[in-house]
Figure 1 (cartoon, rainbow, N blue to C red):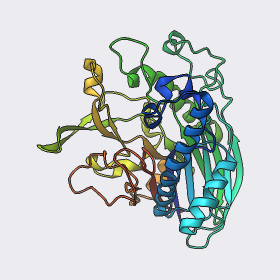
Figure 2: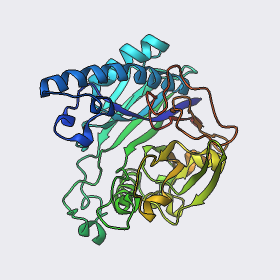
Figure 3: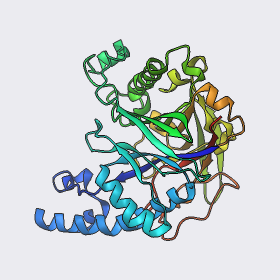
Figure 4: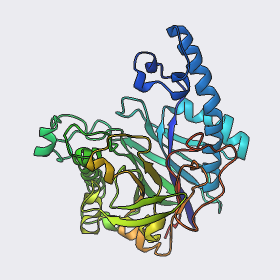
Length: 381
C-alpha cells in the first residue's frame, strides 16, 4: 500500500485585494507605479484589474503544478481560507485537470497577512485505499513557555515567554490510510525577512525564531508519541521551513556561463529537527546540486553590504519532508520529486536540470509559485 504526499507553498493563494499600496509606495505594484493615479478610487479599480489579470495565469500554473504532483495528500502553505481553497479547486484544479480533493483542512493561523497552512486529500489513494481524516489539531496558540523554547536571545529580540511560538501554525493531522495511521505536521516557519542589526543578514537575525519553531515542533511530536516511542511511529513534518543547511551559490552570467558551488552552512534554524537523528530529511536523498526548491536573487539592488553581497544569488532547499526514523527506514528507496515546471524564466537552472515551463510563464511572473512543490511516494508498512 502506497500513499503519495506533496508539500507546496502556493504563494499568496488569496481571494482578497490588498490596497495598502495607495498609501505605501513600496507596497505598490510596479505596473501601477508606472501610471499617474489621481485618486484612491481610481487606484483601487486599477489594482482589482491588475490582480485579476495576473492571478488567472498564475493560478492556472499553480493548478498544473499540483496536478503534476499526482498526490493523494497535498500539504499547502500560504492559503487565505477554506473558501479560497474550495474556489481554487472548483475553478482551476478540477476544471483544468479533473482533480478533486474532497477532504480539506484549514485553520486560522497567526500570520498578519492571513497566509495559513492547509491540507487537502482524496477519498482514496491511487491504489484504492481509503483515506480518513481522524483528528485535526492546531498549535497556533502554543507559547514559548508552553513548549519550553524561550531563550535569552529571543528575549533580547523582544519576544516574551507568553507570546506564540509559530508565526503561522503547526497543523497536526492524524490520517488513517488503508487502516494504518499516519500523522502529518504541516508547517510554515518564520521567513528570513530583514534584519534590524547592522552587518547581520536577515536570515541570521530571524534564525532564533525558526530555531524555536523547530524545537516547538519537536516538543509537540515527542509529547504526542512519547520521547522513546516517537522514532518508531509513522509521522512526517511537511512544509516550507524557510531555512537551509547548504546553498547552491550561483555566479557568472548568461553570456559567460553560470557556475554553481555547493556551500554548506555552519548552522541553520532547523537543527533541532536533525539533532540525534530525530527526523530524516527525505529530500537529502537527492544529489547536492538537485535539492533546491527556490531561487533567490537580489537583482537590481544597489549599494549592497558585504553580507548582502554574499547572499546575492543562490538555489536553496526551503521545503521539507522530515520523516520519523521508522518511516524513513521502511521507505529507504523513496526519493522525493521536485516539480519545477512552474518556475519563472529568471530562475537559473544547473546543467541538465532545466525543464519546459508551463504555457505563458513569464520572466519573473506569472509563475506557479516562487517555491517548487515536492512530492514523495511512501509505503505504509
